[in-house]
Image (cartoon, rainbow, N blue to C red; front, side, top):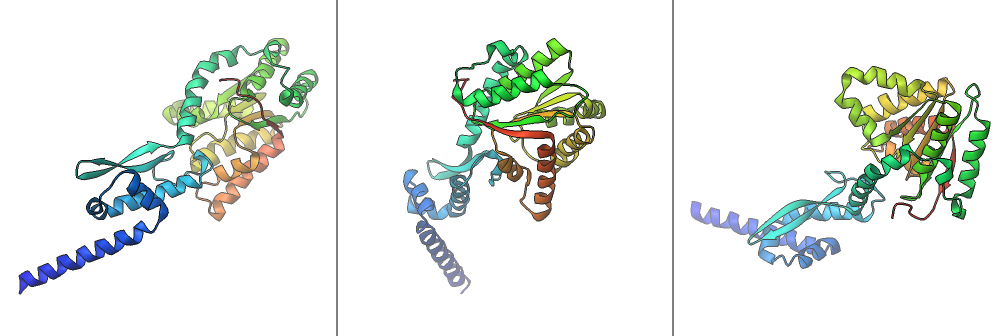
Length: 297
């Protein structure tokens, strides 16, 4: 009798597996995943839940606009099946945005030396797309007065368009010719370095909050956390806004996209906190776009 019950249980489980698998095959993404990897019906049923996980993450990627809104378990990656004999493993594969971000980070390391020596004379003035930004930068330089309330720039636009170079050139000229002190930070590294050296946290935050000119380069490329957004970025911007200190930003995101990026889980509270950051940025800067040919290619 017990044996018959066990057999019935096995049959019911088998039937349930078959029904779940057949149901999933009606999903276009799931079916493409199975077909592309030549997964047999037997393996498909056996690893049905893993394939569901992969399908879910692939669907997230299909509607994703960048790392700043990644919904997958590991940011910038998606789970993908790897068939080895009679076993289906799931591996993390970097998405197109993660690959592009890694490529740009590698290029940024090479470009950092150039940025430190950027000057006005090296700016490409032939590109018509850059004319308005260059005019703004030149006017800012000519009129800069340490004792005036002078807004900076939120400069956003395409990858490799030269946003950082233009602002570094401006700051270098101000420092060399007018002895203006500034700090330029690659923002994704700021949070990392602050966490790694708590002993210097207070002194660094004081420096970032009070230096006459601050550049936060590539904001929006960082992995957002409440601490980074509220305690670090929010504190720096609030202090600079209160003291009317000039602040610059570069980003691959528009101001609206940055707000979405900063809202983390997109809850109502997160949205309010992100909005506060954006309002501070708007108080501190003019918003300009730079769409140009990739200067790094």
